Image (tube, rainbow, N blue to C red):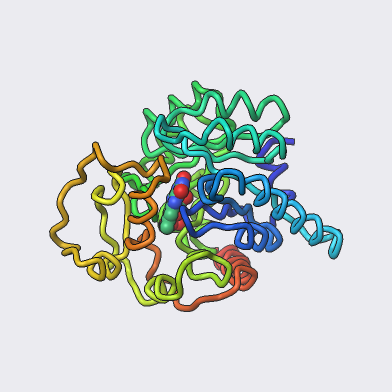
Amino acid sequence: MSLVDTLNAQMRLPVIGAPMFILSNPELVVAQCTAGVVGSFPALNARPASALDDWLSRIESGLAAAREADPEAPIAPYAVNQIVHGSNDRLDHDLGVCVDHRVPLMITSLRPPGEVVAAARDYGGHVFHDVISVRHAEKAIEAGVDGLIVVCAGAGGHAGTLSPFALVSEIRRFWDGPLVLSGAITRGEHVLAARAMGADFAYMGTRFIASREAGAVEDYKRMVTESTASDIVYSNLFTGVHGNYLRGSIAAAGLNPDDLPEADKSHMSFASGGESASKAWKDIWGAGQGVGTIDEIQPVADIVARLVAEYAGARARL
Ligand SMILES: Cc1cc2nc3c(=O)[nH]c(=O)nc-3n(C[C@H](O)[C@H](O)[C@H](O)COP(=O)(O)O)c2cc1C
């Protein structure tokens, strides 16, 4: 069986809940996996580093309890996101803990993840890598990844600028392995569209911010439900890498969303997960252009049930 088929056999919908700095926690991940979509979190969210082992144990016991309660229900595997960058001084530690737990899927960001691939291979884990261009995709394939996550225009957090139609088609010319599409995917019909254009899975971050389980303050969740695509600002000021943020949170921090300076790259590092990055992401709220379709704060189970119904409805209409 291919990896795509193996994963789908454990899922209700071909969706991966994307890792989100600060917001993704064990409760969100367990809720996503038990609802039948892959749940994930950045390893850096577990603080201090020694908490990662406990987070993984909580996720595993949550999933085991759900399996025992309903052995027939599809329970998706979980994933841990590793930021591969010189400024992430936790990478060796976090990778070691993930190897000990035999984490089923690792999602890597920024640099080609050779060391993560080697570590995962040893215990039969898989690695999917985030890319925003053909060049990044080629480098990730050289590093031996099992899957590519194609981050296109409009995605929440660090985002690319290319149209999904353009980038998926170009990457599909040389990559027939697992391909995940990301960027403003918030509805079930979008998931079907992603598959129709050549992706195997949809990657959804923003859709889960306004969930009961996400670790965001209520004002953040509410702002997601009240915003539309025109409220999303693309800037590199906050981390040194271009990303999408909620206009309202930038204004609330006393900055002019329409006149933001360029980042001073020597002082900012998203990858470090250090003080400046944490502060930026606590005050300045990331979200993608798909916010306009999100109207209420719901439990993850209800969000996924709605996605499943929308997906089925879209299939029936075609
Ligand atoms: C608030 C927020 C924080 C994010 N943090 C991370 C992160 O720590 N690591 C990562 O690889 N991607 C991160 N992302 C990007 C997501 O994993 C994913 O690419 C994106 O959410 C997909 O686009 P969408 O939000 O339009 O669904 C973040 C996104 C958001 C909205």
